[in-house]
Image (cartoon, rainbow, N blue to C red; front, side, top):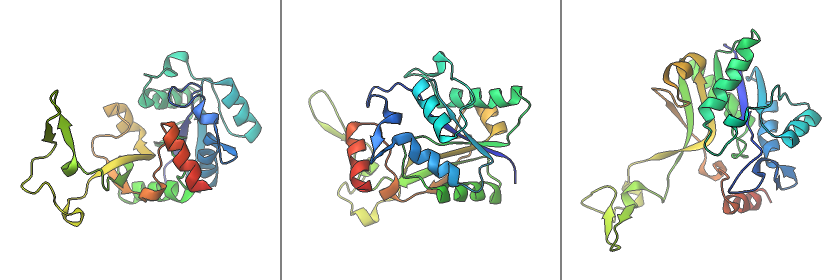
Length: 228
């Protein structure tokens, strides 16, 4: 099996939740849940934390986790893209003569991701000879057939025109949204397309109950409630 690098992106700033990655969730910093999952993985060859923050860097040092560089300021803003963060990490290793065949982005904002999911993704990736794999979750009740836009007069327009706007849930076609748990892609596909999703992404469905992606204080409350 080829070499897989796990990358945990963890900048210090955050607008929705101040210092989100180090905020305590049920007695542990949020980032620690992703670190533990990566540590327990049997198939990641290596994982690192990419950060611009001295507190996170010091935490990684105390935990014995590799954080081999301080991320440049231009890759630590609200508008900095994940793809640039990943490419920066790959470039760092390649300049030091270390090459990986594929990378997996492990966002700290999805704390319920397990090491089993990481390894299942890697096995699927290589068994099916994929170039990219992305974890997804069923949209459930937030279905496109039930969505509307609203004009300036508050008139509703359906997102999808259908003869039966009140279609029973069981009859609705299945739609998915990225869960945020897993983004895995070959380095060659990443460099070729400049996207973490790639040109032909393979979907890996995850349990909706575990697909908590923390972006707001409400998300944090939900995660804490589920853990406790």
